Structures are given as C-alpha cells and as structure tokens.
Length: 283
Image 1 (tube, helix red, strand yellow):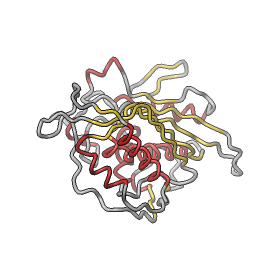
Image 2: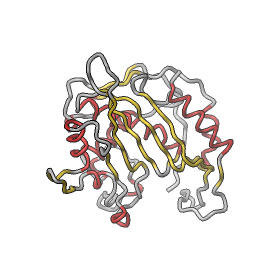
Image 3: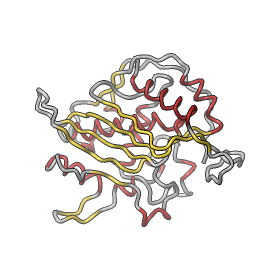
C-alpha cells in the first residue's frame, strides 16, 4: 500500500484524537456564510517521504499531479504572482482585479539579491550552488519576506525549502538531493497531499537539472489542522481502502529546470478512491 496513505492516516488520527481546538478563540478564517472557521490542530508535525522508494501521493482519493506541478512551475519557474499565468483557479479568492496576489510566492522567488559573485534570484542561486558547491549548508529559498508581508494578499503557508546533498555511494556516481519543506500552517484535508506532491515534483525537477537523484522530502508543519466542517470528511477518507503507489517520473531528456512543462510528468498505474463530493474552503 502507498506509504503516503499510511502517513496521512496516522497524522489525521493523531490530530483528531490528540489535537487541541481553537473553538471560541479569535480566528481569522471564515466560511462562505461568514461563520468563524475553527480547527482541531497539532503543533510541530514532521513527515518524511523517501522518493527513492516511491512517489508520495495519496490513493485514498486522486490528487491532480499535473495541476500540482503547474502551480510549482508558476512559483519557482515562471516566478509569477498573477493567476492569469496559472491553469487552475485555486488562487482566485486571493487575487485582486488585475489577477495579482501581491508580492507573494513567485514574486519573492524572482527578487534579485546581490552576492559577491553576482546578482541572482532565489531559484537561480539554488541551481548555481547545487552545481558548484553541492555540500554547502546554505542552499535554500525563503518566501517569508517580513518587509513585504503587508503587500501580500496571503502570507506564504509553505514558505521555505532547504536543499541538502548526501553522498550515498550510488553505483552511477550521482549524489542524492534532499529537501526540508517548512510550512507555518496547513489545512490538512484540502492541502496536505497537494503540497507534498508539489514539492516532491520540485525536488525531482531540481535534482534532474543538476545531475542528482531525488532523495528525502522532510515536511515540517508548525500548525497542522483539520477544520470543524472537515472532520466527518476526514474520518470517511481515512477509512477508505488503500492502493499501491503509482509510478511517477519525469521526461529524462529534460535537463534544464526552465524547460520542464507539465507534459514532462509521467504518471503510471494510479489507482485511487473517488473524489470527495464537496469540500468547503475557509478563507
């Protein structure tokens, strides 16, 4: 059975059985009818996925992997903050009349910083350092720009990626690229597997671009929560049958990070349960 399913079920049970509630507290999110959206939460959740074993996608219900990849390309490759550059509509609620989500996500990736050896945006710096000094402990992206939070329509949830290289003495000589994804807040039902698969794909693309193999994705969530109107949906979801993980790979001919498209993602034998009929989203 899919290891991602087992991790997800264990996390959800832990939140439901041992979490604390925000009910009665002053909370920002609201349901569409204006009611306060309360949660059951766990602090400091850490999940580990090894991409050398299998791709971490749920089989309890389908995750739209090409849509996940498109959003990652929107942020880290296109470096856009405009929903007009994104195929899905998941960011529509946070966009202004011009389609901008403010100085968030892709805008921050594309900001130029000055280094002793030149001027680079965050993604170009990561790619350069992984090629030239892969064992540096300073290779990361950070979207949480405190000086520009007031210009963001939504503060970044998944906000930093730290890349770390290990030499596992592979027969083909390739190094292993690992990532720590830090997330300040997560709506577990709506976003957990979406974020996990997104950043697994990002890790795979970056690794392939620098001649490495994708290794571990370590996902740190400060506030992992299930909304009050999601609890029954979560209980139903985690009771479902689980299937073997599909095979997910990238077109091996693409070796430049900026050449990847969603057509380069190959998904084989993805067996899964049905979609949940309606998931309300708190904004």
